Image (cartoon, rainbow, N blue to C red; front, side, top):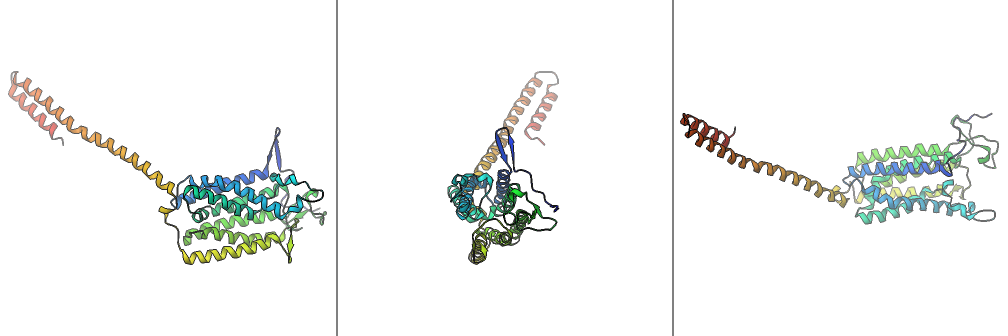
Length: 344
């Protein structure tokens, strides 16, 4: 009997009463949260406002989800349309099926809308969010693990993934373990995120070059993991559709990286990437000005204290003249007044 090093979960959904809690959805949500968090930190470090990435993500994320689903349904239409198929299943996103190509493409449209509304250049935003997108993909791939889908060819390697009989391909019903392509791609995406962060710090990438590096690096990993997969897909000239897509996108990303690097080396001016960051500065200045006025008020109160002190000394002097030994007392009072007027 084959023993899998990685056992598949018995189910990918938990029920909280009538409400289903799906692991696939949790993986996607967690990925989005991490992407926005890391993107915000990188954006602020580049001179932007701390809420800008989240505000633009409100546009980018829904567009990306719709784009990812559309790509999957269009390229795998045989799963939803035709004899014995239910077209309504195309809306069951929780059962899996998001194409990264469509998610990035339409997500970029949503990001462009958000950037236009905020007055932010899209390439600068893309550079900041690029490593976060890679980490989001790394987490999202674990949704395939919980759904027991998109695995690779049969294998006897010790890290083989056990697949239950109901989810095995018809061509290999007796093979119990398969290549865990979800894990391969997840680890690759983590490596891509680290690569982009390192290269960005080392070479000061800007004007969309960090994003282009992410795309190029990701497509290399996607090519070989896609080559291992055995799920149904369109094949052209011996390669799956997603392999051809990876090749085309890789070439485009490399060309963009090189051309932009020659025309616009370095990063954008931090003072020009986010108007919202400059809107926060007057608030800080107003607080500082208010504090300064308060201190000035305290300093202006000091002369009045001197006048009051001099008046009290004069009053003491008059009383001293009217009493025995008044000259000595008057001299003492006069000295006290001078001490008040000229504090040490």
